[in-house]
Image (cartoon, rainbow, N blue to C red; front, side, top):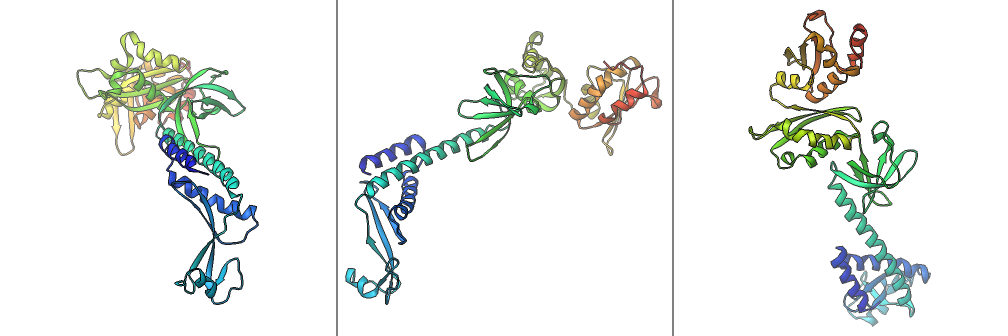
Length: 368
């Protein structure tokens, strides 16, 4: 190694952000192993690389004792004082033992260490970049797939999109462009692993942030999201400027904004409702498109008892209970739905999971 090598390390420090001192210390440590392996030495040695010239030297480290029993690790006091009179017992004496052809071994070892450290640094940079982007949306190209995952090229890293995280009936081919939501980023021996999803509610939220400038600017805020991927979703939005209609902003002129999102989600229906601090108003809005006659709130049980017009009962419950189930997820309330004429004897949805029981009790309701 020479001064040009040191200059190369300086350049690496600037371009890759890997400190020169860290690289040199790693090379020195690797050279100790290289020396012992190539020269069959059991000595305690130290390798020193000159920070300016790149010259490599090897020193055997020996402990000063009265009488040396193991000359590889010890040196007698008399022999040590011949080198330097000030040496005393238990001092460490360093004697240069650099082999004549050690430069070749040093160059090979340095190359391996630097290459490995560059690879590790690049992996670390990529990991930090994508770790900071957890819960963000990315666009990639489908490279290949197996029985469990699609492999998505994101440029500097390949992401895993599990088949279980795709929407029902969704299939991708080689070179298809895909938008997905980063769920987590993990370190592995092969570098960072990025996992993405097409079913996560966060994908819907990020798509609205991309499509609706008022959300990006903070004027309109998404308060909650409930999603059954590939079928239907509900989002609750609020405004910080009373002159801005949050629902209208998300729908867009002639529905263009929400339609762009629906197209990206392969036809998934999206209900946009206005969020309210008043749970009665919020639950009423969440059951859209059904009309609500009244809502009775029971705070202790976190239950909202809802009365709807007779002809809107099936609409309020939804296909297989989907509308009521999504409304419950959106609001955080258990929703009990009854029609006007039947009153307390009417159909009830005590929890979204019990919707099917209600449908069985009322075969006249429209399941479609």
